Length: 630
Image (tube, rainbow, N blue to C red; front, side, top):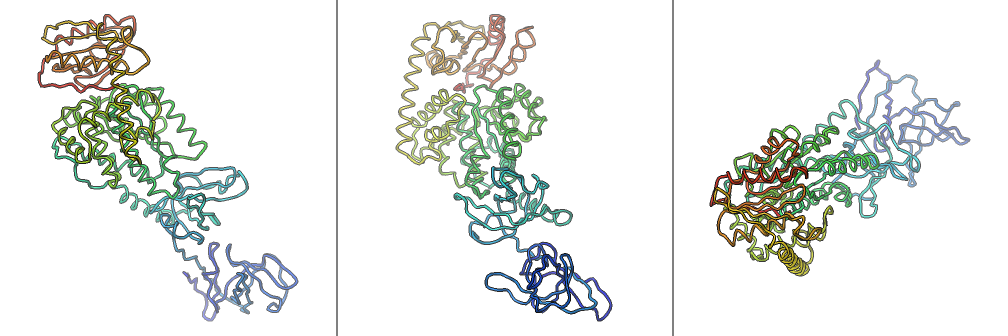
């Protein structure tokens, strides 16, 4: 018990005045307390000493008459087994009052599963307010975790409307278990202000900084070029852990191909584990994390509008904060800017991990974090999947054993010729994956990504990649089936398409192969135009052994692949857009792989100009293709 004497003349008695939040634990026998009459009955008076301390003064201890609201001085008489409290009057003429503040024992949200059935006091920040058909649910964050607190006014009516997200509160209530989730049934809820609020915020800030710190993990391979990116990856890991700790949702967008899934699945898995450690609600990962594929090689306005609409609806319906957007294997170019600017109206933070050729001047000010090998004078051979396995380990290192084969799958999916590929393949071999199996997994991922279209295929993709998968035999059988089915479909497509491939020898010595994939390949089936172009390209590279460029085109698009020719596709796209008035040329990619769009009426002019630029490109016999699987 804490007292604060107010002084007074010598000889005056001391009477203690309980603050509203005091409990019976704050009362000591033999001390006098100020009480207020709240009821008069035949056998005595009911009095309040605080909001939580009430009792009876029996008529045998009274002299004189009292009315509701009168004050008197009492001392503790007896606390009965049933919890009833009896007080006795104290006869004092003059006295000084000394306030008594409740001495709180603050519980930790992260330890409440051990205190079910107890009454506890919590202090923390409100991170979500959700109104149900019954109680109002306040999600409260302290230094150790986040817990749901249910306050009931009446069915469907907002309890404590003065309290909102980001407020600091003190909550008292009983700890209960509701459908495997820990929940506090609120008896009292007070918004803290002034020094009390500042003290709690300082504690939370210090704990946040410590808990958000990424784990120090040793690199999976000795790769000096990759180490240039490690600090940037730590920044993203710290940002994502902070986002989880403040209970902000995360929306993951990734390219719908093998490398994109090798990037997103490990990060999703790591974040889910960290969310489970942070939240007492076992459903929190489902509510706070969403992974969605993007078919386009940039963040389309359609996707951004849908993401924003869902986020605003979740804020209105469930009291959630607006999410952080995490772009993986996508999101580095000027084509992403309109979508990012749309999100900027709502201050939605954005982080990007990508290995496509970036336009930092266009996207830089719109991003909170950006990891890309080009920003460190490296290139696409460091795939996004390789980066994101390291990112996932920084977030939650305990899942490493399930991820050690994933960088090799990512590299094979994107045909990376990085020096470290042999090390990654060896690492996977130690886990029981030979190179043929890794290629089959890559093929199966591409095949499933095609048919899933805009669905994340969470459990199916995890089974194919063998991450967070509980059936090893099913994984092997599934990969064998899908990879075999994918190869059959590719063969059927090429049987139809190869006779329509046109050849031309360019002035720089490269072979150019062209095919109208709109008219001379099966549509709306696997493989899609980009994949079809890539498969044709691979066969021509193997057939000729010379520098090869392949163009697969349709009415308003072209997919580009090259081996042994330094195309610099992003620069070519910019030059085409400037040089062909009304062409509407846009697109991008790596130096040797990419795609462009244009208006249909200017197709011939765009393709002719494109071939002219290809014919003038430098030959580089050591430059190898990193064919994207679109």
